Image 1 (cartoon, one colour):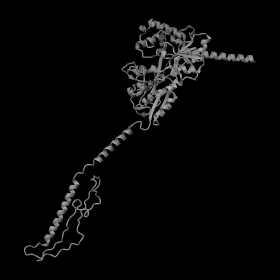
Image 2 (image 1 turned 180 degrees about the vertical axis):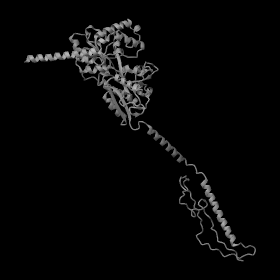
Image 3 (image 1 turned 90 degrees about the vertical axis):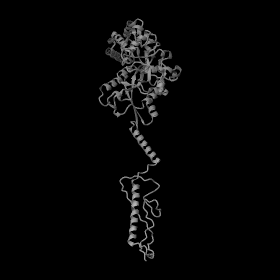
Image 4 (image 1 turned 60 degrees about the vertical axis):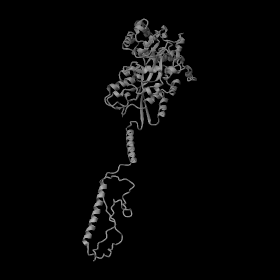
Length: 545
């Protein structure tokens, strides 16, 4: 019996995600098995099913002879083939759905490290962009005119490289620096003007103004000084003098508010021609100012500390005597008497014009700071400058930082930043050994801070060889060691001592020797001298005629 015929099904049905299919049967051009699957956004997943069949035409074989026991209908075979096909398709779809819903494998460790490195680089770049001085590092210095050697500016710029920017602003006096700081802090509203002293990173301040500046909140402590080389190189004498409390008084537990860069002392200058002409002995100590033959021939700075200090040194005591009643022989009355006598000797008490009176010949003796006296004496002929052998006062020019942190603005001088990071570099530069050369060569009057305790006469004299010699006992701006040991810094006084000083000054009747009468006297003297010279020239002309 003839059997029912049915078409042969393909030997295998291959699906894209069926691992049992060989590459010869199925190859996906978009799937690389060597890389993990990556999640992509904004793309639609697609599935392609491919039925692989034999390349030959299916030819049904000869039907077997029918049997009498079993006969399979043709329609039943077709139904079985369709069921098998649908079952295979269903299994393939389930595999694909399972693969699509399964989570992606974790990234490889190398990719995790790369992501971490990227985050670190991004954070480092953000930090670099936030730095204030990424391109240039500015430093603004408000200095006393003539106190900074010109070579310092050039050498500092070279030492710091092209990214540093130094701006130096000169001021006529230390008093003007304090005055400008006081004005800026008292009247500043909002931003601080770039031209103001408060906008500077460091300012010059005299040691005599240090206590006042601290007490009034004009400057602030220098941060991190203990680890700085410039501070470690200072002698103990400097460190004791610089350490102050918030009231400006010397305190071993206080802070460092300033750094010295130049110092000098009070000196006495006199005209040797006048002294020889009148057979006067040279001046050597403070006591010579009380000599009767010099009455009315002396000009002196207008400073109560210096004037009363000269009296105290003349009486054998210290500039820094705190209790005049107990520490001075004769007490306050003796000091008042000697002060009155000095007032009669001095023709002019004036810190601005005392050297002008000395230059024009109205006085023969001038008492003042070495930074003022030495340049004038070198321009004059036959002048001697001496440090009193009993000792004298020491002055110092220092670098300090304005107290801008107390201002209610973060805009200082047109920029938004804190103090310059070059402050310590600038101070360290000024205190280097090489920076002392302009002082030793007497280009700038004064001496380096290191010379206060370590200077020797032999080492200093070699710098003055071959130069016009000024008649002085100063050696490259430094007193001889035996005199230097008796010199003193002007330490802050107590309130009671300041009151005593004021009463002593008031008792001098200083108005007789005040500024206006003295200037009028000097002007009158100049007019008289000019008239005499003109009259003399006219007489000579008449005689020639």
